[in-house]
Length: 298
Image (cartoon, rainbow, N blue to C red):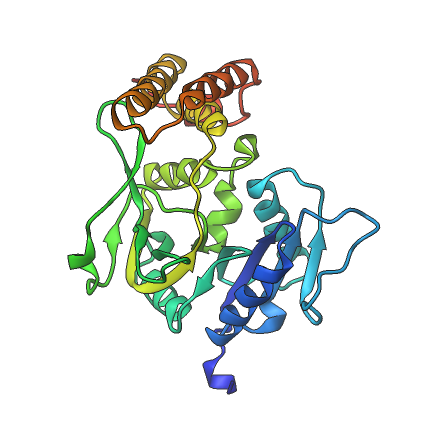
């Protein structure tokens, strides 16, 4: 790789949890995309104090932390990059199994730098098992209940430069570093919904959240566990809307889960019980320090 191919204004945080066999391929795809090895920080929250070595990752900086969730790992990574003066104007956040196709990083960078209002950009996410099936091109919040839903059947938009979204999946996202520092990911969620929360707050502050169709990244996805759906959907609404809207939203998902199991035979009868369990867990949790500041009436 020549010096001219290196993307020098992008630092990358790769969150790793007990999957070195996928991490190696992720790192290779990043360096092939022009992200210099010394600009990549692996935040490992899966190894204990006696096993601090990741096979195949010699030469990469690694920050070992206890497992406080995905948002905490990213926040720790941002702070570490700043403290070691390895931070850059843009920060790319990736899971340990996201595989960026050639040109993906440059495409996202180009779009962000083209408009100062853009705070975060995300790619077309493909199913790693097929390499072609699209599983995410960003998402929206439904008009009444504010339920997060993916956009679907948007192959016709594949040639557009960028498309505004209400939120993006957190598997592979590029931020302006200043925005990621100022807003931060909320660690209350632990896993799932933290990016939906952050991107909603960024949009409320007047920033753009965009999907970059020509940037392609593949990753496996098994969906959100039912317990975390109930818990985090309630926390999301309690923080950004109201407790009562959260209760209505989770009740809808419980009803939907029952109907799916009854009518389509594709759902599991235990799912609605797990959603309810997560909801109860969320009701008992203390409010986030950001709750009162971020909530909008209605």
